[in-house]
Image 1 (cartoon, rainbow, N blue to C red):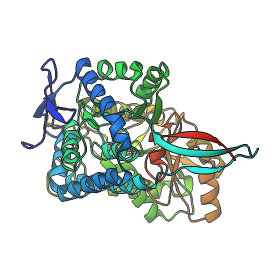
Image 2: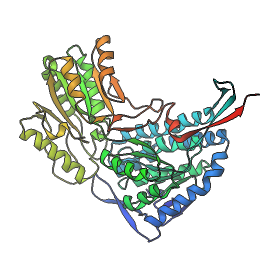
Image 3: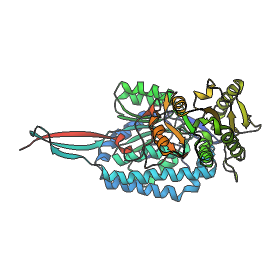
Image 4: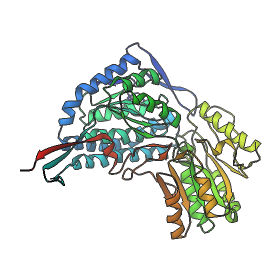
Length: 479
């Protein structure tokens, strides 16, 4: 902790907020303050924007191989410092150290992936159909970007946005979540060490998101917004982007269905459920939210899942053998408590968990509910906690209809041994990603994103860099 920067990072320099403001960073396992970091205001945002704008032209001209090598060096540094970064992440957001180490590896991989994509940006050449002109097609960076990251995967969401921006030749202002600024500041220090030029990445930590972000989006110099967060905030940011037609990519909320058919391998289904539900204590946009299980296997599935969930060890993420850390804060835990109470009040049965432990920290036990009423609030809300709500269905048509009955469409999970059914249901689900007999879909080499109110655009994969590039077409007389 003592080596982690706590100031703003603007123009390659660590600096205090202009008005001297600071904000606390809490440990959700104890409620104690870990550190105080600079709390940026509008003036700091303008300085960060100016640094990004001033660095853009030269950075765009930087050789792709040079950008690639910076990302590769940063990738190697991150892996070398896995234990320290994992402990930092666990301290500020709660996930167990084993999961935090996994996130460090996941985060680093985005830098390796986009280091390889940086040298593969291409264009095109050809004669147009009328034969009068030749077409030269080139790719160029979209320009200075505002990147807004969430608290649940503080390192990986940073690298997933920073990696393609660097590879494409864009400069950036990064605003991390106020709950988890330390991971982002540590990442900025690593990139500086890896040779990233001053002004290419600027980090403004703040508790005043509206005051900091809105002027940048309406000012006309930021040309791209990449945001990961709630759908409600995403709608607000889209409206702010409209004034100056800022290009946007949005990874918003989810309400993932988890469908188990009567022919599913239940061992595989329960294993998948543990990953899809309990990764990051359920605080993930990809978390399984609504478990639709065929009536003939629902009781056995729920009992098996409850035994597995009940065996998990809850405690501070730094503790030995801990499987489930605290939720991010008191408000997050209160939301989970209210959703469970509402479901129970409507007739749900608690198989395991369901009550808040006494003592410090924002802990909530892994919980399995059955006989859940379809009108329970948790059916239409992103739970963001370790609660599995099990409902039954009788046929495929019903399962698909109920799975699609939501304004969100990020990911869905399907468990069946039938190949035809697997493909048929996957194609009918209104989601951007499908986990077919697996509970894990996230991978830097795959395009991550959703449909409907789960967002716009994709991150990762070969298309991830496209979000940070524009096309230019030049017509030349064909002589």
